[in-house]
Amino acid sequence: MKFHENLVKYRKLAGFTQEELAEKMQVSRQSVSKWENGEAVPELAKIIRLSELLNVSMDELCGRECKTKVETDIKKKTNHFKYAILIIIFSVTFGVCGYLIGQRVTVVDEVVSEVYELPDNIEVSAVNFMVEGDVLTCNFVPAIYSEKLTYTATIIDYFGNEKTSEVIFQNGMGKVAFTVRHPEQYKVILTISNGVESRNVSLAEWVYTDENAVSWQ
Image (cartoon, rainbow, N blue to C red; front, side, top):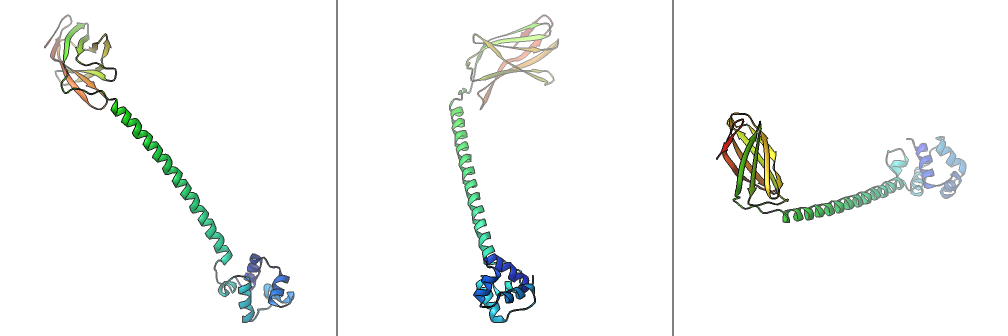
């Protein structure tokens, strides 16, 4: 921008009318008007005085592209406000996250404290197999039983194919059923888990099935 355009800009930013600026510069209003219209240029001493009154450097007043002190102060205040908002947001976020993490740790601690301890070795008694058509049923009584534990049984055929079924309990006795082929030989394994670890127990090293009979060991 040229000098006369900058003079208009910075005079208005400083809040002066032409009359007020002329009075402070000890010149006529017409002189200020000519400066702003580009009809005349003030002498160096007056340019120095103008820069002081308008709170702007001579370089900026004469056309150098810089921000005025007023604009710079406004930007600084705006940036400080933005930083304060960001600090508040981060503080609230970290506070909420810390609270949730604390709650989660508490819940996890409670869950872990309620885990049913599994012994290294678990015995199973009263194991009995029955076959009816293509359904093989196994009844058994585990040495430990709790609703906090999960019980599943897996049947494995001669070729290594596996099927897993959930065990149903009634009066402390477990029952599980599988669809099988005849004739076939299977291995049956019981798995007991507390949600953290599990134990495998053999229900039968092998079960030989026929349409009307079953034997196991």
